[in-house]
Amino acid sequence: MQTYITLAKFTGQGAKTIQDTTKRAKMFMELAKKRKVSYKGIYWTMGRFDVVSVFEAPNDETATALVLALGSKGNVSTQTMRAFSAKEMDKILAKIG
Image 1: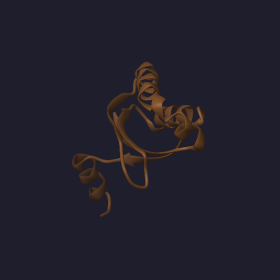
Image 2: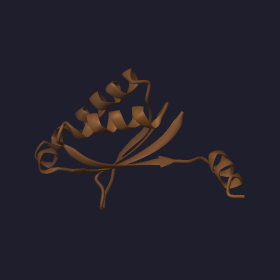
Image 3: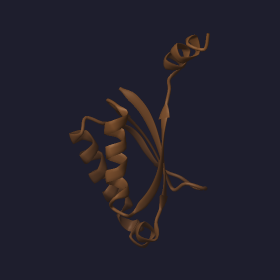
């Protein structure tokens, strides 16, 4: 499984319905589970981004489809990054030469 970190900002629509944010997160985690994605954590944050989530997916395509499904609801805009563990990074560094 590969690790991903998604940073999200509420849209105007998401801010107007902020009281439903935890309910939406639960529904989204259920959708992720159906797609064989494992959520490691979701956090509401202060600062530039409103939500940070960490999840594992079998591949980039699955992760991308999941995040696109999230964005299509119109409550958040997202930025997703592939994250590498120390073990994965060691393999990458070994290829530098």
